[in-house]
Image (cartoon, rainbow, N blue to C red; front, side, top):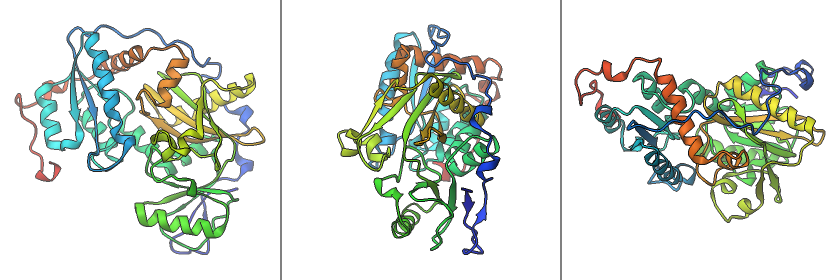
Length: 394
């Protein structure tokens, strides 16, 4: 089924955006430079003692909003601080939500050797994670995780799907609604509605899976009004869900989400409200039961998507398998949640990689990249000063 973008000027005629299924490359022919990689392989031991280097731990909070997906980062910060101090590093917190000017002044005053970037946005704006990483990039401060370009591309789900299609990576057929129209897309029910520029399952409830026209229009109208951003509509793949985590381009053991609820959906409550019905009905299993062939196909397709988006250091790919065994990439997540309860950390455990080793590897990756860059310290005009910035950034 082709994916479409609802034509603003002609609501009666959706514009085809996707090639049809006949143009999709057969799964058997999809190639990857890491086709034969073994999941769970122990990454090389690259971490080194800190020797007094300063590591900044950068994060963003939303104290005025009940956003567990953002505010839970504090638990990771505390654990990471302990890891760094035990290895001889100096650790310093940088809180982006306190304002850009304070953040810039703190960077200049502290001059960290490397920044561990845990930032998931700026204040209440998810896209702020792109801009914060851009500041580090412009200042030539070595930092962990993906580049601003990759973060922006992954956050824009529609653009990411266009990349998948161009690379012949299977992804569910879709349509995009920039505004409300009583026009059903040429897709097959059931459908799932997603915010096109959010992550962490924000805006996702069981009501986002719809089975008829009335429920589709009702949910579409509500999401457009509440979130004021384009809505991505996909054919809902009612099957098994897998996550493949990567560390330094190497896959960790595959994780599967076992569903005992309907619809089979990892919604916001399932991810962030511990003890909820949705949480209890979505149980991660790592590793899952898979044939050798299924495992190879999942790893290969996940790596194709991961590399297409350009993820660096670590990330996660979410996939689904339908009743016929066909795989679809749902999305790619650079800089995923690394709190103790998160799926990425569970995959580390399955690979017998201690959390401490993981953190030190991330720091070492960034430090290694920093050796090829001119230090931002040399470009500062005077110690303790930053270029003049409009007051609106405070």
